[in-house]
Length: 112
Image (cartoon, helix red, strand yellow):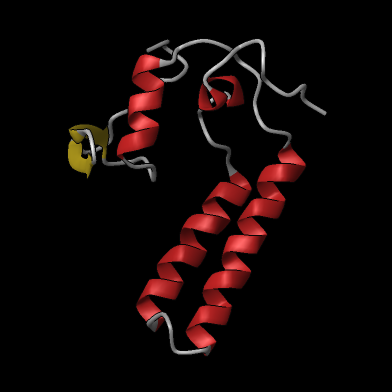
């Protein structure tokens, strides 16, 4: 993992699990096992999603959480946590280059 992709440890790590098993993730980060694996195994490319895309995606997540809360599909606590994370992503950015997400450097879309 490159130095820029290494999360700064604040209070240790937590264990996240997916279909591949368990992986350690820095407690200060909001991502899970699959993002951590991508950071560790696909350390190439530096193209990030355009800022407007991330902001729009975060607002869609927030709206969905609030709608599902209103419909009784999410508890107040669940919706609040989703909104909190969405707004953090709205302020920050995901650490993974979209080239590594797509799995191919040549097939990556060009940033806007």
